[in-house]
Length: 125
Image (cartoon, rainbow, N blue to C red; front, side):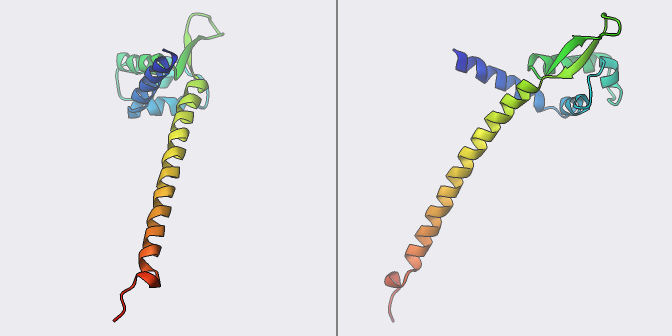
């Protein structure tokens, strides 16, 4: 059950990261928390469009809304590093797995080449 929940969380994270605008929003949030209007500034989309992207990022656990300390009514958006760390760990694990597999395949192919090109396997004229 826990594993299925983790898989669903990863699905949401990678689906959220699949969109270029959302990735750019995350890049902007690396510097500091921003209000929705500050985050929306460089994008040529409606406020509702930006809000939908933010909703996707929040549901994926990549950002969270925090009440602004200045007035207690408005919100600022900030990155949630834990979610990115978990997604990165998943990628790293699978990258290492496939790298090890490909290294083993390369070694096998090289051994096969060496075996077939050794003097005992060559035909004499």
